[in-house]
Amino acid sequence: MERKLLNEAVKPLKLKIHSQKKQSDITGRRINKTSVLRLFRDCFLAGIIAYILFGQVFGIAFEKGEPGAEAGNIIIFNRLNKRPKVNDTAIIAAFSGKRYLAGRVIAESGDKIDINNKADALVVSGNRSKKSYKIENTADGRGTIDYPTTVPVESIFILGDEGGKALDSRRIGVVNLRRVAGTALFIFKMP
Image 1 (cartoon, rainbow, N blue to C red):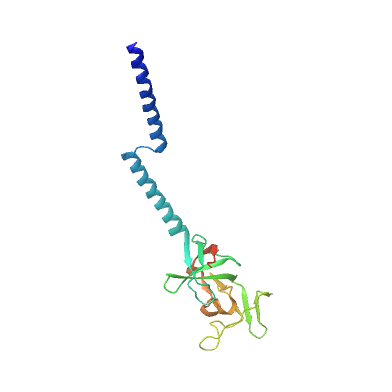
Image 2: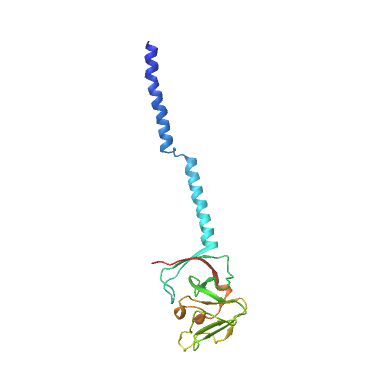
């Protein structure tokens, strides 16, 4: 009889211990040296992958309100594609290389460009654009290029989407492909 009472007293104790084990499995694992090392390893690998992707493959350009650019736009661009085609948005390393210009490629090497202010027309290799582009007056009263002109080898001609306000090839001239930082993938327009 004593044995029976002892067995009954031990049974609930075993259940409690068993249920406590399950409870600790549910709430989380014990932290040990191996799991901490795995966490550091995973964070380190994630950092390396982020550096490779955003430091070498992708870039982020913030337009800071240059003429024709809305302040605060964020552009994710591909650094591996340094040969943009017509209608791609090219990201140009400007001035010191720390700032970027974004512009739509309208002409490649060998294309003939004519911007006629009187006719309010842009003509690329004989094809007239539906959108009008004027040459804004600069200090000497004209842009940096005499029109019509042919885009030199290994160069592109970019125009900003804001028409006459943009800082683009009408003011800075044709862009050598060595200055191309990449091609835009996504443009986020901030409110």
